[in-house]
Image (cartoon, rainbow, N blue to C red; front, side):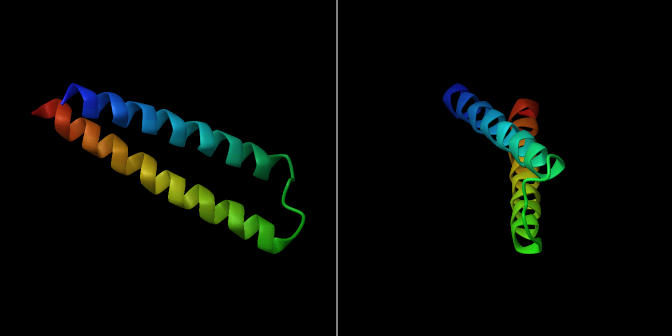
Length: 64
């Protein structure tokens, strides 16, 4: 289980880093049009879902 937990933490860190980059891009005005904005917001939504799933899995494993 340790290898799987380590992997999950690595994935979680990568997802959180990408969330930060995407949020920064939105806040800095990177989207040049509504389509680009929607794409970034959709990416952010998916990353948020992935982050929560990994966190839930880690919590479940740690409770075992």
